[in-house]
Amino acid sequence: MDHFLYRDGALHAEDVPIARIAEAVGTPFYVYSTATLLRHFHLFDDALAGTDHLVCYAMKAASNQAILKTLAQAGAGMDVVSGGEYLRAKAAGVPGDRIVFSGVGKTAEEIRTALTGGIRQFNVESEPEMEVINAVAQDLGVIAPITVRVNPDVDAKTHAKIATGKSENKFGIPIARAPQVYAHAASLPGLKVVGIDVHIGSQLTDLEPFRLAYSKVAELTEQLRAQGHDIHRLDLGGGLGIPYARSNEAPPLPVEYGAMIKETLGHLGCEIEIEPGRLIAGNAGLMVSKVIYVKSGEGRDFLILDGAMNDLIRPAMYDAYHDIVPVIEPAPGVEQRPYDIVGPVCETGDTFAKQRNMPPLNPGDLVAFRSAGAYGAVMASEYNTRPLIPEVLVNGDQFAVIRERPTFDEIINRDTIPEWL
Ligand code: LLP
Image 1 (tube, rainbow, N blue to C red):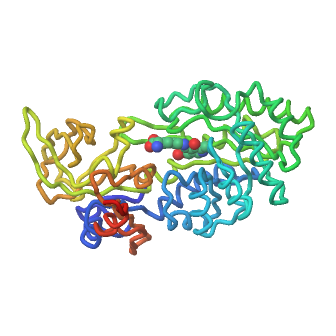
Image 2 (image 1 turned 180 degrees about the vertical axis):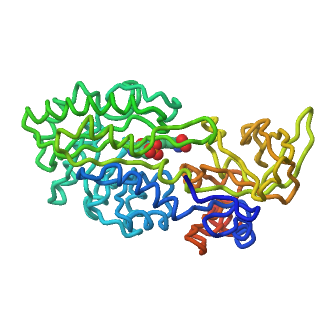
Image 3 (image 1 turned 120 degrees about the vertical axis):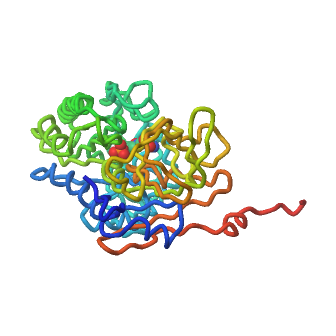
């Protein structure tokens, strides 16, 4: 459930009409709902009630500091995957002991930044990385808390580009090698092993791959404990999917996910961390765009929007489906017609939807892309010298611009011309 509903014939974000925001900031833009972000965070937090746990929001999904602050104030930790994300989380006021650092290619510099500012743990992805963390920690005279990310060789049954738990993927260490890798970690004086980490992919719509992976982690926990390692924290990654097409998808609920976690891992008495991104932010955000032209093609009509693939890359990159709805509620019984919905970028891939049924639309009409809160604004680019679009946060009847649209001058002046030209 989200807080983007039609009221008095017009789409609202909580108590604010979308059209009013469009008037204030221009189109296209992203808009997020505070109530929806918090609702989704609490679904996870409540699902793990009774277990020592921390919900570490995977901030790669939507990393505006206003969003981070909203979640951190509710008690969330953060999962970061770069030095930049670490600094952004700190800037939003998240304490270091609530930040976990994931990612396959942490540099010595990023590790130093996190060790200096404070970190809950590094989720280590390889033995070479482990040695670098050890060296930096020793240099700073501190001990780095770590888990090792294991690759359980489980098929997450999701889009190939976002599956991470198969043995051929670049992530983690093969689970069978874990005993050697943990022995190696224990021999390094700058490290303190605190647990195990696993993340098998994103947009999972079935609990079984999770259950399989977590059962393997349960077995490994007992094995490593028997070998003398102090395994008291399990980081289970993110990945729970969301319904993109409202009609036919019903992924498992956080409460069911939480129950499965307790069932597979509860007996171990470990502290549990999870790293949801998409489920918290996805349906808490819309991208709003305006129809520029309606163009009749060969046997089809195109809706040409002012938003494009550089603003929301998911359809072009993953063939992702996003619901697209008119901001003015269609009159009951109005006849729908199929449109190809496209952006103005000079690529055929700049297509959001093909033959999508919509009520008749005209230039100037606003449309909203649902489920655009996660992996939307964060994956945007300035391709075609199109400015990054603004982000707006709604809270009840208030809204605030949380990232301004840059001016063309700001964009153009970022280039520097060598003196020989
Ligand atoms: N933890 C780790 C280590 C991850 O790599 C990810 C996502 C998450 C947590 C959060 O997963 P989530 O709960 O959001 O599924 N750009 C793609 C998704 C990439 C996901 C990358 N890793 C998309 O738009 O579908």
